[in-house]
Image 1: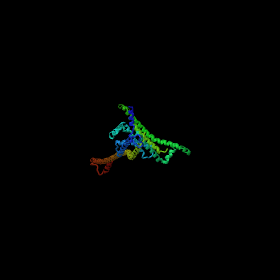
Image 2: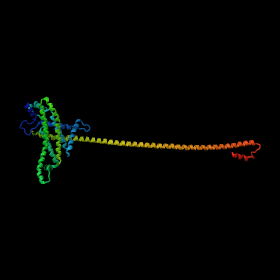
Image 3: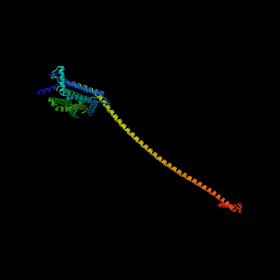
Image 4: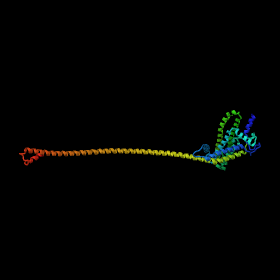
Length: 272
Length: 156
């Protein structure tokens, strides 16, 4: 049982890698993460673009009202936090919220559902050994997915800073804030200190963004896997409360990622 | 924690998705929502204006009604005044006319009385003359005693 349990967990925590050999390097792909997130991107883009295309001013349908309420939510946050003018930030925030929410929501599927389907397909159509077919259904429980987004946001932060303050202004700020003095010698002494502070602050942003999301979803997935190890009659005792609680987590994490992105970008355009 | 090319793939997907949202999702929907908000605001403003217009119209109507009532009352008052005036005039006319008629009648009556008296006097004088003639036929000559007779007649 114990070795079975460990094997079960490990199996569930292994990605479907394009390169199955253990010596794989950087150029291997997590096919499951990539395909599921791509599919969800299509779902989001498809639904929203369809609603946008068919949007009716006079008599909106239920789906349109739903989409509008999400847009309203995002728009309110952006308008409250981000005061500069930008065409990018609101769509960016909307995309982050919806895409992360959808990817997180994959956690609500039964832990064995997609892996078993993948195994069945792999076994019956591609003649693979079922045990060697791996599938992880939650893309945000993969650091690649979370870091991809947080590093994109990081690039946006730098881009927004440079656009708002100019390259020179941004560098100057890196050296003269948070500790500021008018004394020339003091300024030279403080410059490396400031630079270290700013660097830490800057680098901490994408790391905290992505690790927060990854940690929450990874832990959630792991707990679902552990619950799946219980006898089937007892699973609902823990599974139901955890799933219900997880509805909150997946929404909250998507929202937090979006909010922090807006906050970071608004900090980037404001002068220290 | 295994970083590999998935990260690049995800970043590309993310970038394309953001671009797509920026191009095809956000602008049409927010424009539409703004347009709707504007329309609602316009509608509310129009309703407010309509309400104000209605209030003004009601006020004007009340004003007109009040004026009309006042006018009617004035007209009624002047009519009443005129009526009493006419009645008074009629009364005055009637009384003067009555007085005149009465005066005329009195004058006529007086004349009649005078005439009757005259006639009566004449008659009595004749009767007296006739009587005296009959009594004095023989002894009294009418021609001789004419002076006497006329003085008697004057005494009636």
